Structure formats: structure tokens, C-alpha cells
Amino acid sequence: MVSIAYNIRINDIQKVKMIKKINKKCVECGREDQPWYSKKRCKSCATKSYGSISSTPNPIKAITAKTAKKKKEQSSVRQVYFDYHTKQCTRSEESGKGIAEANRANIAHLFDKGRHKSVQANLDNYVYLTLQEHTDFDKHLFRLDFQALKENFPNSWKIACGRLKKLIPLVEERTKFYFAIKKYIDGK
Image 1 (cartoon, rainbow, N blue to C red):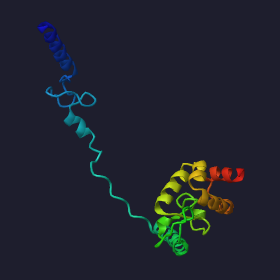
Image 2 (image 1 turned 120 degrees about the vertical axis):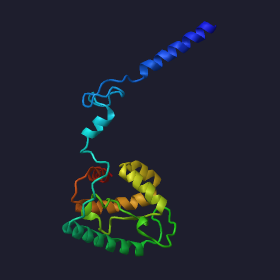
Image 3 (image 1 turned 180 degrees about the horizontal axis):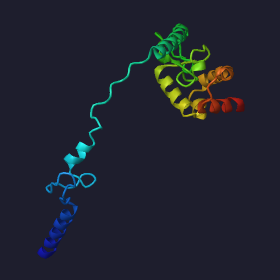
Image 4 (image 1 turned 180 degrees about the vertical axis):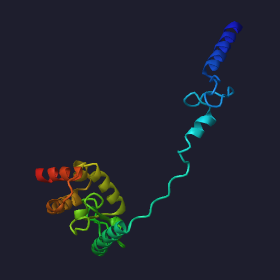
């Protein structure tokens, strides 16, 4: 029994020796006390040659006046949209729960404002929902899972489909979402 345990220990030691890196001569500085790191060089020589790679990131460029103007215009358009809808939103169109102080999070865009700028501020591009309903609604909508919307949001999805019918001709952007929702609405 002792000889078996001894043989196992010897085998384990041999495996460790095989894993350990062997020191070799660096082609740049000639050091032999470290293993090769990259391209037959030691770690310090390899790091020196990568001097162009900086550990500090480049500073963020300031936005141009043209971009700032465009963002300001979009922001003001959206502000009018949200001001209107926060005044109109009193209850969820899905559950009927009252919404005491409506905010932007209670207004779900049917065509998202990021990819569909042509209808981002269209007053028909909305559904009033509670915060949790909005989260779940968007999750299904972005996955193009219209069947889940029909099952989980029976009240608001019917309303949304009516609004989507009005919006589809107004959308200028041709996205994957646009084609999927158009196919779904046309098929109904």
C-alpha cells in the first residue's frame, strides 16, 4: 500500500514539473531568468514594445455645435410630447389602476423613439401603463413577441393595435421592428 501512495506522489510531482514554464533566453535583452512572454521575449521587453497602447483612455471629444443643436431640437420635441401625455395619463390602459402623478415612465412608445425618429413625438405613439407593466410591455415588444403581448396585455394591446394601424403609414424608418409589426397588423 505504501508503494502505491508513493508512486502516485511521484506522478503528481512529474505533472507539476511538466506544467511549470521553462526559462528561456530573451531575444532582445538576453535574460535567461524568466520564461518567454511574447515573441520569444521576456515580459519587460514585450511590454516596452507595446508602448503605443496606453493604459489611460483618450478623453471624450466635446460635441459639435451642430450636434448640440440637433439634440436640443429633439429634446424640445419630446418635451412637448411628454408634457401633453403626462397631463392626459390618469390610469393604466391595461389594468385600470390609477396613476396619481404620471411621469415619462408611465408612457410607453409603441414605435421606440430611438430608432423611429419620424414618429417619436407623434401623439398617437403611446400606451399608458404602470411602471411594471411598461417594463413587461417593452420586453415583449422589443422581442417582437406579439402573441405574448396579446396574452399578457389583452386590454392595452387591442388599443395599441388600433394606434399602430394609424402610425405605420407615417413611419419613415424601415427597421426590423417596422416590418414585423406591419406584417402582424396587416395579418389581423
